[in-house]
Image 1 (cartoon, one colour):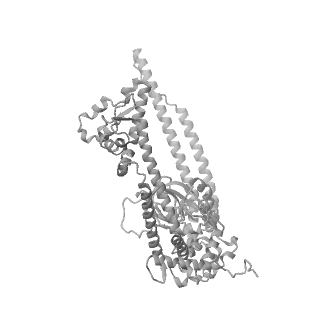
Image 2 (cartoon, helix red, strand yellow):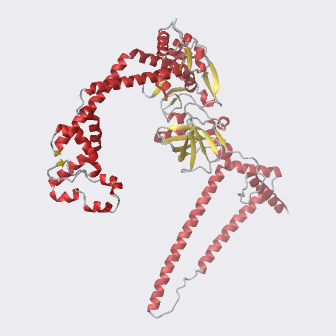
Image 3 (cartoon, rainbow, N blue to C red):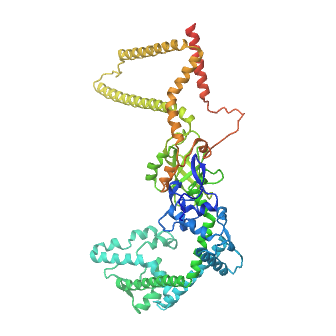
Length: 632
């Protein structure tokens, strides 16, 4: 009777706050094909952008569509467990395999064993163990033999078709160097034939030669090489005499190798004759390349058994070493939560603003990523990274899970270290703001209010300054015009702006009324406050803080409970089937803050700050003073 899909006794574990299937034994891998897809953490993942062996990912992506899907993982598990006798050894992740550990009783195992023996025999080894090093050595030797044989076959096939004998290579080198210059020359000749008045413009001008005539012309070969290869003429022929000195040696080479052979005794050539030489050389190069390809194809057929053996052995060793780790990043996602390992999607670490972000992911599509990743509920920093070693720039997203965010802004620079230890210059290009902690959420309303006040005050100051400057400028211009008029009329009067005392009196009266109203309100509030017992006063202060910070803290608490890496990975092409939660305790391990010892020496230039304890102390003193004042 066929086994039911749920007949295997799966083990479960809790990872990252979510229940998951535990893959710990070879038996689990053998029954992987029976596992309900709804219980898989990942349903699909991209091949690119991962910190993993590229050959293993290529093997798993059996249909070469750039994605590794559940069916491909199941197929790989079935093949690997049929090849290896003891499937429990797969979890060890070893890079070598004993020949007697290969299951020769299955069809796939027998083929793999035969292939492994062929690889070892090619290396003249009699060991009973095959390793990744053996595979690399055999593969390199085979590729070198293929290349050498293909080149020899191509050379032999093309030798009979050498257009200029042993001078063909020299003719090709000279032709490649002269093609663009001679094409330019014939185009100039055509333009002169079209309009003879353009002859002087298309020729080398005396002025250009005059610019360098006072210099050592032997050192100016590069500038001379920019001139036409010869003086263009209406007849559109290229004379062998009068070649630009910078190109004379190269032209002599093509003349000796090809022109003298095709046009013996000629003193010049036209465009058609030149094109015939070029075509002959291009046909030869194409023939040589085709023979090279044919030689490689023929060699592949001759070495088909060895090539197949290498591919089969590569599949066996790569999966034997890497498959269990793939499962921990695919079925379980346990590598992400392990304190001593990193998941295959973690690209490195970002050091910025006195902290190190350990959770960084490469971004393949910034537009798609921003829309999807915002659903993660996490504070995200997008950076463009450039390498001083010439590697192509890349985009990353770093997850910030600890510390404050006051110093973070678009344009701020940091350093990104990839998994290989290479450093990249990182610049923030985008920030998605979400709560980092409850404490940060507590102070968030005050910080936002302070920023709002600062912006308003700065705006008012700037507006007032602009108005004052405009008024002063206008008054100065009016006074200057009035003075000029008075001087012309013989009058000596000074233009003095009038001071409107009534206007300023009204302003001061309005300010006084406002202050009086505010003072009266505070006095009434103080009388009500001091009528409470001491514990009531404390409750009022606490209630005031909760009234202001409570909503922000509640929202942050809700988001922090639901922080999920899934949307970040989904935006990169993953199909995440289960939550990848980043709770508060786990988040603290993903961002390391700078820690300094207590410094006892006094710094006269240290910033004077007032922490939240000082704020509470001031409020308490103010409350006590108001109490005794009103009671007295």
